[in-house]
Length: 375
Image (cartoon, rainbow, N blue to C red; front, side):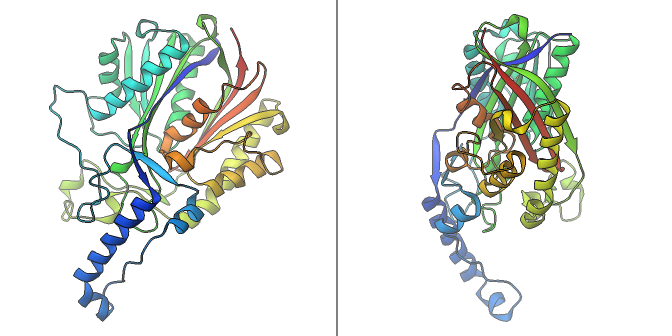
């Protein structure tokens, strides 16, 4: 049996940034327009008035201060309130593939490896821009990788589930190395017109090169164990899909065709599941929580991460033990925990232990226990 490691990571960050100030100004302008256009219905009680958002509200609710997006023009236009992306021809790389190539190239460079060393590509993300052909096969082709590729979707846990699959393939000897890629264009499925969630998401792409330990050429992280859990819930949902046009009102502007969540229920139900999952995973591997040097958690909400950190460690975690990137990137779905890992792992010493954990719709939870190693 081969030992899997994470040999390199990469993060593609879109160049456009939306600050909370910009976002609030555009949302409030949209709310004023909406209220004016529906003044009669609001006065009769048939519609509720849209309330303003605020920078203080966003930071208190989430800890987010800004987000990166592939297009800010449409998002900040009160008459549009969504990204404006040009139509690409079938002969051009898709947007997700374009983002993926950048992140994969970084991961390969960090690992001192080339596309010739890779046997598989897994594109694991919360939404894919088309049904088929798989984005992973397109990425495979653009990089010139032999072997195979496939897409998978476990919402915000897609990255850890993808690493779990890649690690199992390494252990079984079916591949030498696999790229797990997470292109998240969250701005496309966020409802920017909803005050309760208009600030949550940003765009990014991460990549992790998972390979056999015997083939590494640079400092790396040994994957000691992976574990996944799912438990069905409707509290985070998106009803969009290819059957939409088949239904009587399928093409209407329906709220449930974008990201939806019952935030209070998610907070109450997910946190105990995640904390129990992490503690159980560590216990089964004979690792006491106080041996953890770092936790790279899913970047959904600062309060959620603080709660999980306290439950797992039995005390308040220090910023160094549980780094957050929410303030700069916002929630980037499956990519969030990998951004945190990529940006806050170089300082660990050989033998230091850490755990990546992501959680989200499904409900789904994925965890990866790692040990820092040098060549």
